[in-house]
Length: 203
Image (cartoon, rainbow, N blue to C red; front, top):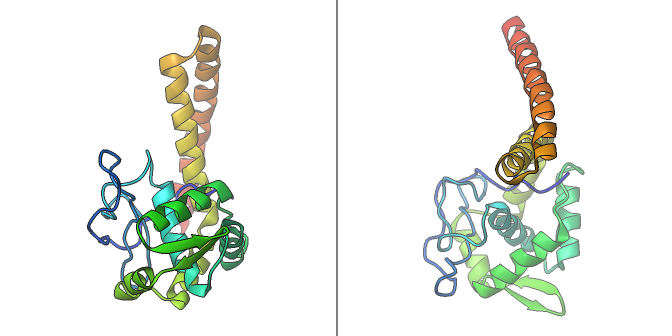
C-alpha cells in the first residue's frame, strides 16, 4: 500500500520552533502525542512544514520513531514499516530518503554512508513526548488494521485531485471522459453509502 495518509492524526501538539531555511518554511515533523505519534493537520511541527503536503512530515515522524530500533538506511526503514504493520503499509523509499534528509537538517539524525542514526537531541525529543520503540510499534500495528479504510480515503482523494486537474486544464476529450467517469463514480459512491448505512442500521 502507498504512503498517503500514513503516520497522521496522532497527537495535537508538535515540537514547536523551526529549523528550515529562510523562505522555505522549515521542516514539519508533526506532533508526537500521548500514547502515539503523528503529523496530522491539527498539529504544528517544526516550523510551518516542508513541501506541499503532509506525507513527508508523516514520513519524518515514522522514520524518527523507527530509528529507536537502531540506525538504518531508508530501505531498512521501509522494511521495518512493512513488518511492523503486517504488510499493510510500504512507504515509498524516496519519501523516506527525503524525510531522513529533513531530519538531518533539523539535527534529529546524522547520516553516514546512507545510514541514519538518531542524535542525542533526537532521542531526547522522542523521550520528551513519551515515544518509545514499544509505543511506535503498537501504533504501527494498530494502523495496519485500518489499512483498507485509509486506502479508500487515499484513493478518493487522488481521484478528486485528478478530476480537479482535468476540469481546470483538460482538453475537451479529457473533460468528456471526466463527465462519464464522474457519473459512474458518483453512482457507485451513492450505492456504497446506502449499503454501509444499511449495515449500521442492522447492528
